[in-house]
Image (cartoon, rainbow, N blue to C red; front, side):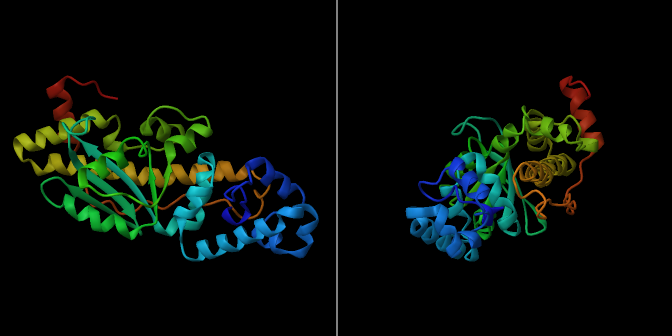
Length: 282
């Protein structure tokens, strides 16, 4: 889809891009053809210059270049081109207020592997690990996860970023991550009904008891978040790509295979905390 895109070029909006498509300029290669001159007119040199630059940027895996140029509603177009370098990211914290609260765990899924980083254990290792990726995928990460990480570590996550909250909103989804999962038929099994508030309770219980089964349950929950991000983004990609003139050109992606998650939730732990805090089952 990225190679069909022109709206990342300065002074070329989505409407102009659609006119290009209707007039046979459906790809970067088409724009470089002399036959495109009839429609591009006095913009031909400008468009070709940026198309050639785009080809070089894509070959160099420069996802950030395309994020800077694409309208926010079109950031999904980066996914297929940079999927192999995508990091699905989610954090758990003691609360929502930076300065008062802190990160308890970070889950990162990328390059076929799920990794977790825990406060007081290996949290600092995250700083080196995240630099291996050129694209972030989060849910509500632009307003929560990324700012919280940047302030906590004193670092800038200077890579391209697809925030699924806005991509899915474009498709009519609303509510949090778990609600979006249910809308496309994803299930959490023993973690069904566990949410961010429950994750805080899990951390507090672990701090009070040192029970490793409690920590494992928290990390399994955190890991489930990042695994579902890939499935949601593939779903969104397929629906959005189907709405373009290129729907029949092999853009559809198969459902992703679930990775091995190195943590197991304890049903006993979940039920014990529900009873302890008087929480209803879902």
